[in-house]
Length: 99
Ligand SMILES: [Zn+2]
Image (cartoon, rainbow, N blue to C red):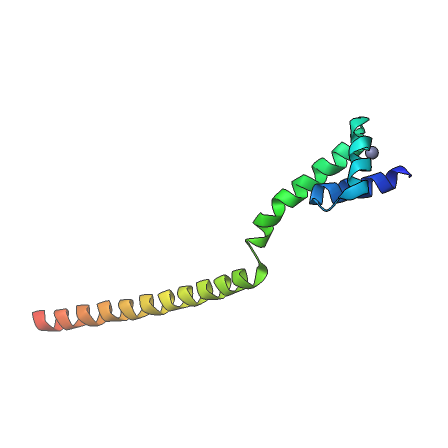
């Protein structure tokens, strides 16, 4: 077996899908102290540890969030403009009552 095949086994081992004879052989290979396979498994585990985080932020909900945010901001602008108009009307009314 050339070493690329061992790295492939290391990937499967990290995923937990290595079993039977392949698992026994790979563990025997690891006990020989193969740094390349350990590094490869480490990399696999780092990638796998990032997956739940990546899956927690799928693109469709963030697009919806962006649209909601845009709509909220538009409504706030609209409300702000209406509130401003109300204040102007009130001031004009107050001024006309005073005079
Ligand atoms: Zn190896």
